[in-house]
Length: 234
Image (cartoon, rainbow, N blue to C red; front, side, top):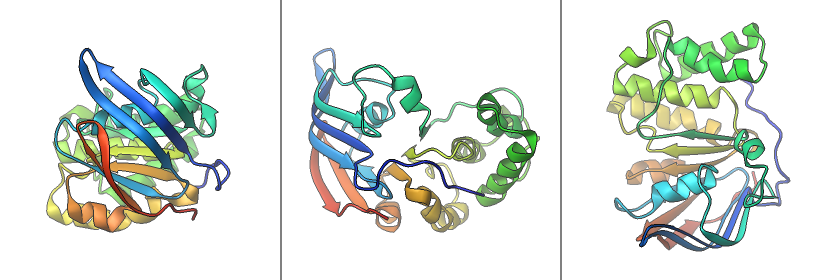
């Protein structure tokens, strides 16, 4: 499938967060000194439960705002002041426990494309291509009757069909058996950075981080404890 979409300038970070924090009551969930995510890179994110991974993913995905931030820019736009719905359309996110719409697997993939005005022929082409890539064998089956692994792959297909510029994945291969997971590790590599796309990939698997990541970032108690690798401007 054609994975090229409009991008920010390759010299600009896709996401730039500086001196930002997020709290829930008295709990400081996230306190980031500075983080930049660059075009064409896969930033793998790891850390123990409660480290702040999901909070960071939700901030980057514009589902929540930081309580304070000296800098919070997404696609070179100030993400603290309005315009968030338009920016959010350029971001795709797959949660660890995916929500699926009623209806068939095909309807799940098609829904977002229809909302954006795509023609049936293009919707069908994307659905078939992604079903083949991700091993979705029966798109006519009701989505809520799928196994957890199939549901996870369907949620990934639904997100990839929209060709997001920034892709956020929360342990997307966690529910898959080893044979499918190993194949997808290979197949996903070109997709995660297609056309300069940036990906933030949460995983507890060192193998996934090593195989897919351009850079690796570790979180502990809401703060960045290490970051390895270098930015990519592919």
